[in-house]
Amino acid sequence: MSQILNNIKIESAEMEVILKKLEAALTNLCKEESLLDGAFRINHRYADDSENFGYAVDIFEESYPPSSNHLDGTYAAASVCFFEIEHTTKTYNGYIKITISPDLLNEIGRPNTSVGEIGSSLSSFRIQPTAVDEIVGFIASACRLRIHNYKSNASFGCCGRFKECSEVKKCIHSNLLYATGCSYRKNIEKGKVFY
Image 1: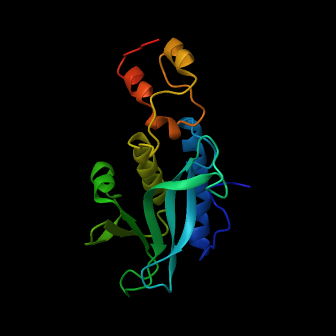
Image 2 (image 1 turned 90 degrees about the vertical axis):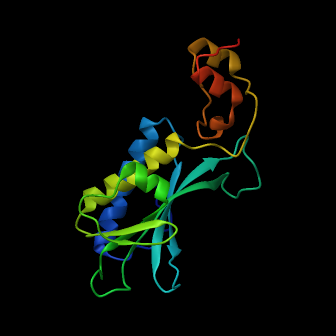
């Protein structure tokens, strides 16, 4: 069973298709970026009105070394976006509402078929639920960008693999999310090899 969709409520047939395709896209993204399985999770969360729920896409960083502070050894390290089926307006009833940080939205741009931008501290817009590939592509692009700009809360000089990293001139740590906190990795990426 996938670690991406775990005990999640599915509100409609349209949302089930979106979630399954998004799960496949995020699984592929983990492979392409050499991330551990489960680096992304889709969780259901209740929307502001507490009556309707939506889905949050989060980056999960596995603790390293494994810690007993987290029940499954991971924690939500960064949020990517939130999406839900719109129920609050007649005009957009049934549309998918996506909420994302303005910075991510500025870099990616809204999907071509999006309508009805909603003003708030986060950027929100609506899109037809039948535009499945566009919805999945947009969220996957947001995840890729968020990963490329990700910084771990952990901060350390280097790990025990520093000689191997020096030889291949890149980080070889098994947990690349955690390894974004490595100072030596930052130097290697700039072409500065010390060992």
